[in-house]
Image (cartoon, rainbow, N blue to C red):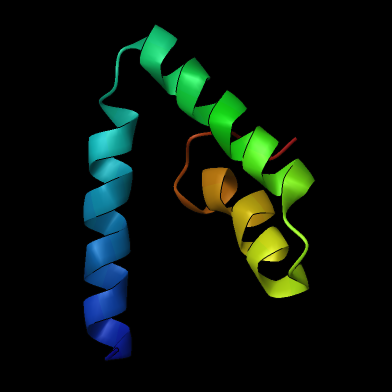
Length: 61
């Protein structure tokens, strides 16, 4: 995928996810956490770990 297109897609996804009601966002984050815990592929696990931060769903502490 073209890098510029990938960035636009990620920004669009992030925008939609940030607009979720708080209870839905919490369920999404819990689902991502569950997927991360069970993922055996290191690259996919790294992606899942970084996804909420990359989308701005969780602030970096």
